[in-house]
Length: 267
DNA sequence: CTCCTATCCTGCGAGC
DNA sequence: TGCTCGCAGGATAGGA
Figure (cartoon, rainbow, N blue to C red):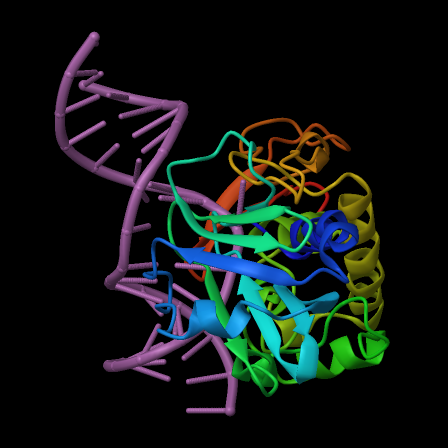
């Protein structure tokens, strides 16, 4: 569910409501997320002032007083939003702020995770380059591809190389770039890599402008769905005609994930 | 190293 | 209608 554009949309919608506020209460009713919440989780969060809300890849980072960090990953089905979003059944954590605002962490599949650290969270050390950072250049991408035999789509989704792309956006980027998901990274031409680089930023920018993609349960910080799913070129469109050449879109499994492409437009 | 598979968990739609 | 099966936006341990 949440890839970079969805997490960025959550960040943008939450930021004005949380930055500068103090966390007054934390209620945990389910600790069994992807990694269990530690015993001291609620106590280490309560009383802290939120100084900034950042995003790296698919991670949300609440910078707290004294260098402490509250790290949130939404997994496949997680959301962090104000109450009244229609969700209730899997509300695992409530965080109340000094102005009375409450943020509810909801996650039916419990693939998400949260932690509070006094030093930089360990998850970030193994993370690759964020596509919106200046380090994400055509040269960087070319370097990643140079010696790798794996399919380009699997490379794009490897969070230790590039942080933020998931199953939807890697398919959409490769469609726009005219490159098949199965192409081995090391076989890509310079101009193809340049196209993938440029279109990574373009697709993500378009998706953020649309508030992300809501397929079933993604909601932003205000409980609102995104609309980019109506503009998918290939994702979830198996059998439907390509918007560009009318050839039926095909699907095949790559690294255990369904991948969509147009056999007419993508080489 | 590099790459792939299975696994964690709940919900939902397709097909019978 | 009601049941079972497979699949779903992710990360990661473990094996080839």
